[in-house]
Image 1: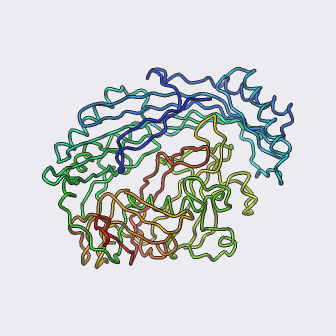
Image 2: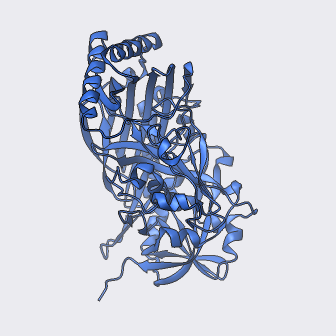
Image 3: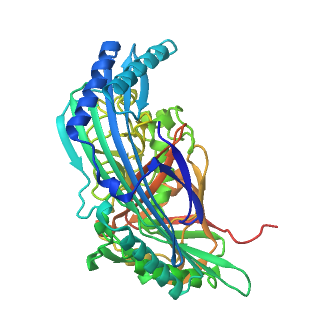
Length: 545
């Protein structure tokens, strides 16, 4: 099996965070050595033949080469450069109506065949305790196909020095603009995933992801108070061209309070904004608690979508099969069966999607060989579907899987993971500035902050990075100590306006945990700027009593 370590990195809105690093350390030049396609097919055939001879009625094989490069900087110093690689094969079977799984990092015919036989033995042992056989929704074999994240510049070919220089330049800009401390980090991922199954598929996929989080902290030396402002740019499923910014990539936030990015990222300019606004937050007025109309930018709302819509519509949580990290779900089957459960207002529409270009979840096929697709989850405010895998589809009357199966490593078994879950843009032409004009008393919020949500994904509290008062249709002074509270149903029923597709963009989570043993996936959430009326806002800085 692979070795796992944890790298403590100061980044993001919470300061120091633990980021999982998979695999063994290697030299940067080794990142470019792929496995031959013919070799992978031969190993897959060996595993499937061994599994069938041992008694499997079904077998799928995942051969993975998982490559990562992490660069961390603080102020004007490079703190670490880490290259990791993990390669191996995982074999999943159905035998006697039950699942079995085994894996090995020894890529020899004997080792692979041995893993397949072990998987069958595990399945046969599981069958003695299983009350119902596994039912897989049908998938048509696609033969030999290949897909790759559309990239123009491979991060593996860019010199480490150039990347480090870019991060240091960002830190320098943030410090000059007012920050007392700066961090800038770069996470680069390449997953080379080969899938084969007894359904007749041999699928080779080459997946790329990037994330460059920054964090600016300003300190008032007289009082010791400090404030931070994290970056607003999203993680992406793109190549290194993400940093080749063009004018059309820059999007001005409502009132011009921030520069946003959609298709390219000027990390130096963002660091400058972060340093300046971290300093401004030290003197920002603290919010008065009460009811406000909230105008939420995509850079904030994506996290609320992730927690209050994405997680509660995962079918394994709905069924109570899964409760790790994010609990179960209030969206129980009876609500879906009623066909009239009021999840949100009539303008609220959510889709599950594995196809959106540039998204973290974009693939051609999931880890069960199911073609990527898009489908409705919330339609006109009504709960109409969930996120399902091949063995879950029959539970909700679906004839095919939604393509939501994923494993974060060859050594872990695939299971249901969240696709990109996105809010459909509004049909009425509306810009964020036009949306603000109708607000008498409100708050404009950008960026993700701290959050809390209960174990059924219902009652919640969310913060942000930047808060601005809206008074009589105009964006005014910066506010601080803001958090909004609601429950999922009340919140989405309070949705009264959604900007059109011109404002739609994606943010996302690069390290989303689930399961036991835990696995990490990456997922994007698209939305336009959205308004919610009459939401309770608390002051997080005031003492009670």
